Image (cartoon, rainbow, N blue to C red; front, top):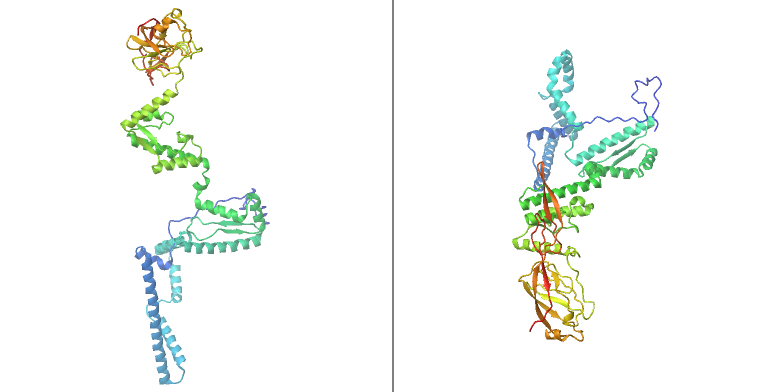
Length: 527
């Protein structure tokens, strides 16, 4: 929009129109802390305190006002009747004019009496006298005489022009009248100068009655708004009203800031409830190691976690899940619960079972591999230990179990192999064990010596075997550095084997233990 050129004879340096392309000047902010009050109510409210009327009180006051109007009308009729009677008496006494003439004469006489009453000051009569006295006073005397009155007049003018309205209907009438006068002035200015104007007025509270007010001087402004903002003037005004009513925080805060705010409140709420349940001054909530650092130490678990994954709220990116998590903790649906003694034992058992399921198989170089019979003539050794651990042909749990060693095919006792050393994972008790030897059911042409021992296709025999201690198996160790001040100490820590019976969660010293080795010899025994 081009700015009008200065008028001829106007100095450009002294002109208020800047030489820049856009002229922008912020209007001074006018405000007051006084509220606007009608003149007829001002002194009455100062004398009386504010009273809140109920619906019944307002109904009673309305009935009283209606009764007062009826009584006043009746009194006026009665007075008019008396005046009419007086006029009728004058007519009968003097008989020169009509009754209406005497009636009007009585009213004029009452008006003259009112003007001639003593104590009533006529403003027109005293104006000249006041003007003469004012001209005779000096400037200092004028200030002293009018000091109190001038301040009172200034307060009344300020309250009338800048005071906030307490009643929405009064604010509506004020805004409508002011905007109509502004619209009239802008239209006249546009007609005189050709300037273009665009004005939008919107309410700032939902309790106000006024709808958005829109004024534009011509269709050029309307097209400019549509091309620049991609929406009509009506839509622009409605969006401005929504922006003003909701406030800057509700519109300018984007989704990221809202999510960060919810995360902060959720984290603080969870930590506060954890401190309340445990009674300890916990600095931070551990989510990744909750079982080791919270449950194991304070016997506290989380009840009714609403999300699929138990994690830190800072790792949740969905606003829906964050709101669900925050409302769940705030309402008490999700909370911390302290475990009893039996529940603690059950929790420890479940943790141990879960750890056993995640254990890898034992190394092949430390334990002989389990093998199934490859032919029908192989014999297997089956042991029954006093600790009631039994050998199985499949994978076995790590306990006092005798490893399975396949023997070469035995058709006679003379071809039996030499005593076989079978390592134990832990030493059995007592030193002698009972071995059960069974022949394969499909074995043909069994040696009579084996039959004499009781080994047939359908039964088994018992033989004794002595146990011998085997040298301990070396276990890998690692060194852990402990820093204490400026000194550093090294401590050997034994890495526990995955097939040991005892699983140490935090090994601190080398575990002492020896492994045993059992020698088995097949010989004859009497049943």
